[in-house]
Image (cartoon, rainbow, N blue to C red; front, side):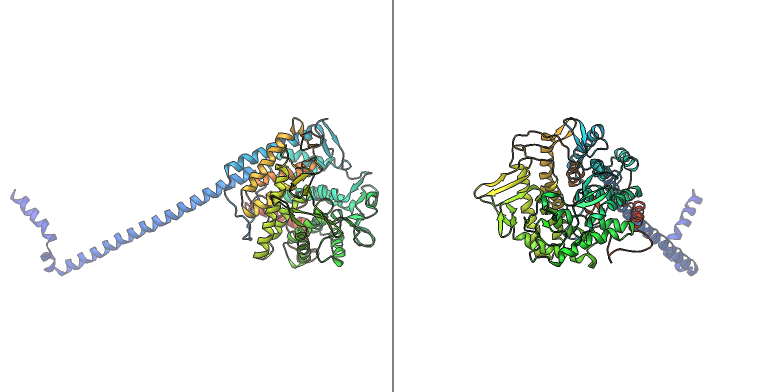
Length: 578
């Protein structure tokens, strides 16, 4: 008991300060141990704190990557193979947002419509230009070039319908023959066939499409062999012999002569052969020599003298896409000095467009008149409903005040075009409309042939403003097509939008344009970004390639360069496949 007490007393002395004061060496040792221990504890606390900060950063990074993965999955479900995520440098453009569940649902409905239309064509009209759904047969409206098939290629690709795309691709590779004794429209063949093939090449990188595009373009080229360079509008695909239709009095049509620039410039860029670009650019240079102060040209141009004939000025039939391509060639060239004159001509024409704007009573609907001489006609084609989209797209190249003015006008005109649809019993638009005092809108020619122009403008306005109202309008139009135009064997137009009586034609542009624009209206804005692609007038997306001179003559052709760019994009994750 006594030894235990002494032992306990001996241990307690080591915590008595007096013990160490009498023994300096031990005091110094204790101090060293204390300092070392403090350093160890402080260092451990610092490591823990830094570790916690690092974990926090890693958690944030994981969350960010999970969000990106979610967006990637959404985009992949949208595009199938295509997912080109362009970075917008334009503050006026709507930022990309996460995919909305309602948009996904609506997009799938549009995709289902495309599958129905395509399957009907494949079953009843394979290889023909267009399907007649009610009689279940194909017709060759464009000389037997498979117009619907070629028009549909990029829509199938964008929607991720891979099996359908591959079957169509095999037909193009093995069965498409341009050696036809057929008088083809240079305009229609360019926008549908050349445009469709070039778009399929830009999207897929498959050089077969480029070779086919070159083949048909070479057959069209003699149409530009005129004294003025203004092309004839008709040419025989097998024998040449270009000419104009008899009903024009020998004149060339403005839209038919000024709507090949996108396609032929793209072909020169991708093949390295300048001849295509030179032919179509000479047209613009010729027209620019005597371009009027208001930038408005009549629909008939003399191909021998290059002079304007006394005829209608319109943003509708036979005039429309000339103005569209002035803007889009500027965009296609990435807005450089080499294409500045296109933008200047377009802005001049937009001043002229303002002089054609009128408003109805009592509802104040804005519309675009037609003009002949000094007289205005209060008539507007549904075809002119491309103009709101064009104005919205072009507004981003103006300064703030002008941009606001033209975007506002675009929105007003889009409201009018939407009411072309809403004002009929079927909720589908007629071919043209008249405007009379105190009557607002009156349908003129009352057929509907599944045209795309209004939904095209809704697509651009939604992309540029982010206003979901345009998606709602587009959805209402799509539902009207589903209700009135969908039958068991495809889609048909209406002979009369008032009665709903059906016709017997599924136009190729319904698959090329109407359904594509509706699909993109409900897709993220990164899908076919407007900063990387420009649509031709048949809604075929063409890759933007910066122009610094007339034709780039580097050792790598435009097509090779573009294919390599797309290949790199795939590897970087900007262009992903299933």
